Image 1: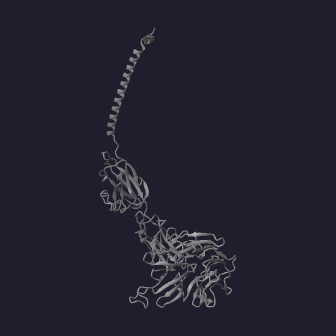
Image 2: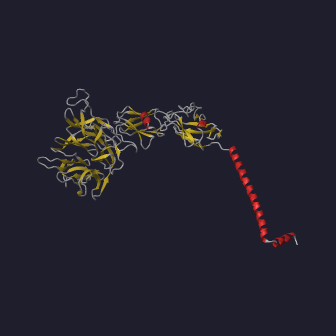
Image 3: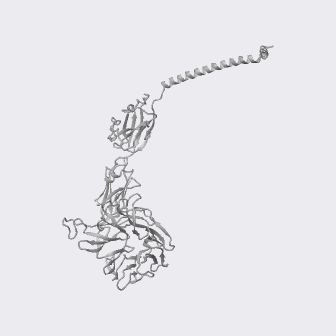
Length: 618
């Protein structure tokens, strides 16, 4: 029998219970020994880890730089920010932060940042040109230097020298270097008109564009128009801060050389001065390029004393329209007064005005305060010359081509032919209750007043046929309010407060009565009338389909609008109105015929002039 077999036999022959106890005790002993060895290993490993961590703890590190290392086209006032992975002792950083500068076209410059003293930057007050702001509780700091900006087109190398430490005294002894390159100085990139431009319109939109966004006050102050035009303003575009528009206070003089100068005091939004002063020269012609409305303005306690011709659209979105002044009434300059006129009060006032469709002429009713007389003056808006002075003329109305002016006189209705200068009678012994209207260039529509022998009526005067007759279908005592842009329809306000739209002579169609109490204002196209609905509690401005009667409310949201002041452009595409702005000043506004895109045409300030009327050719 083998030894293994014997042993097996012996275990089988022995009692099972005592043998199991012996085996269990041995196994337990072995387990206790293993556990003890494991505990000793853990304790020894932990002690070793603590010892190693204390010997090899990491120093504080830079984890973020702004601007990033190697950044280019950095704005001149950019804040330089350094962020650590943990809080550092402020005192350990002081004196270790420095910078050198290398222009891209020259030797090293000293000082690197003009006006910034790096030896005192950590102790500088917040009012200093440059100072350090700690980012607590974020671990880091930033250099703020808006009063001492970077040089343009310069490579800056910043250094944070080794030796800065955290609160536990762990110190980073490495020198850290990083660089950035600043943007070039801003320059004039474009102008309107271009340099050496010729035959420039006297109402041209003047503008200067830069290569970068510019600071509004300094740049506006650095731009000048010469020769000086009184009342000129320089305004930054709200949407494009690199563009500045020059708004002359008057029309430019024809056939004159002007210059727009941009001085070196202009600064970018990053406080960097313009790199090169610039002068743009141009010569005007004898023409206009924009369409205009006409505005009468005056002080609150006076009749209008100023005539303006604002453009109906700005040169670019985000900027105001030009509103040149054509006439300004003289005032009494004598301390003792000028006859019945007190010192400082106007000698003339303006009671009505109409601008020709092309803007080249304006007809103004001028009242002489001292003589107590009035006349209708026709003024060339290009050169400012008074072409005609028509005694007692009122209610001016321009023909669609701007070549003729119809107006009322005490003895009837006359017509001025601008080409010949001849004045002829249109309707003798006729009084008008509204300005004459034009159907194309040949027919006048007259709203006559009642006399002792004839009732009020709407009459037509055909200049080609030398014929005068009542407008077919026009109710008695109605007033002709508007003619459609193509001359196909005439809108009449009836004595009962309604509106009747009738076809013009020779035009197809039939008369259309519009429902409701309406005040007709003008046509936005051949089939759409703009009117004020006066039948509701709150008046509404409406666009009304002449044939279908469908209506759309026109909402004008700029200020508190005077709906009775609304006038529609002869082409039907725009409307103008008066409204009181947020400062309580009455301004003139322009909008598309559907009310969209409303913009202020005037910018009067509190306590000064305000818009008193706005209109077009009649």
